[in-house]
Length: 240
Image (cartoon, rainbow, N blue to C red; front, side):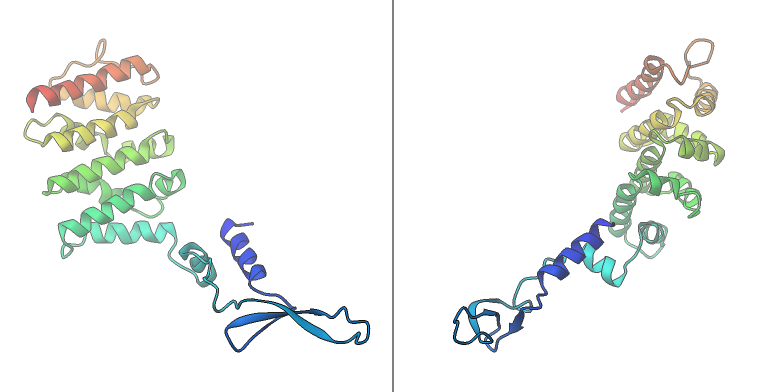
């Protein structure tokens, strides 16, 4: 059973009892059969306890959402992207929405939902946004989505996302913060996925960078991948 439903059931049981009745002073009088042998049908009040109305509720927002309904995580992802791409939203609100979006796609299921929710296109489009902080967050989210996730690695490659990431990572005029997140995204995108590694190597060669031996890097060789990523990080430090 769903955890929230289990907690809701437990709360309901704890706050209902067939042997209790509300008293006028806000307490619940609990009645028990009298032990007086002369009156078998008599009841006596033995204890009082706070009534359910006076007891602090243990229902947390998640339980209330389960009971009354609430936005799903897919809906929250859509809503966050709407704020991020809203021309009227402030930069502060966009960054808050982006932070929420990144946390949501830490879940493998949510990351895989980027495709059916049609969120890959706006996310990759933000890699070219005029605001550096939004480019940084976009690269960060891409890296989070593709990390240890072949399905998202495939989608990133199919959507043409490798080239803009290489551009951000190697562009000398780009801020160091954006470049570092782009390198992080590339690191996640190419590990154990040779097609993305080949695409990244080709883009790096176009930029005049030497890549591996004979321009090839084995995506399953973590030492080789680490060396490539380290070389990109060193360039950022040297050019900063």
